[in-house]
Amino acid sequence: MKRVLLGAVLALSAPAVTAQHLPKLGIKGGLNIANLSSESGANLSSRLSGHGGVVVHVHLSRQWAFQPEVVYSSQGTKQRVGNNELNWNLDYLNVPFMLQYMFGNGFRVEAGPQVGLLLSAKIKDASGSTNIKNNLKEADFGAGFGLSYLSHSGFGIGGRYNLGITSINKTGTNDLRNRVGQISVFYMFGSDHKTRTRR
Image (cartoon, rainbow, N blue to C red; front, side, top):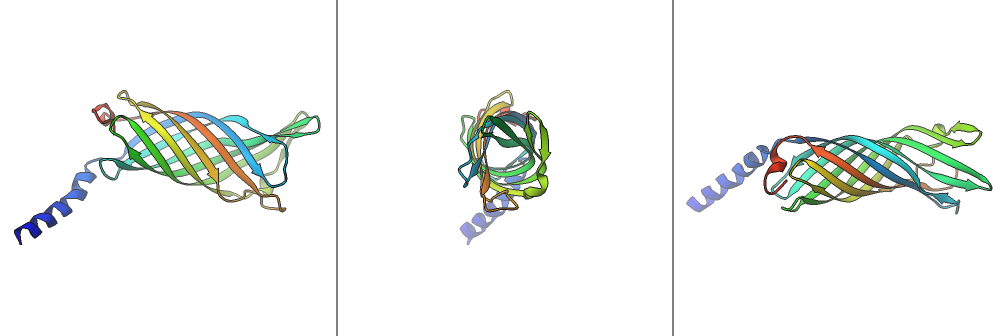
């Protein structure tokens, strides 16, 4: 009976230990290598752009963490039509929900879902721009996969690939989906990252 009671006490005390790890705030920004997948066989190429936002890092255990983010992300593609190059400029407010596994040496692997809100959508060429927001869905659903490294100073670097799961095209039969590679630098506030494990 004593062993059972001891086990129950330890089980109940575990959440209290985890609760001592308060959420950590951070900021991030970097480069986007964005493109769209298309069923129509259109001549599409990658568009270089950027992203930036805030992160919240929440420890679930010693090695697992949950990291929601709010990130402005400039996406889209480049399309060659004859001698004319069209720039698809799609701006999103993305909210990824990353589940991270943290190694003791500062490296982290992550994966999770993402939802994006379309802020603006324009096609630009040499003659001007055309607003196409009404032709695209307001919400974009995807999944992210990545790897990052956090240093003792609080600065880190990471790479992530965001794969669009649903088509963003509202009209027509052409299935358009976001494909975005990201290279980010970030900074985590607080002093916990200065410990040996950098979690």
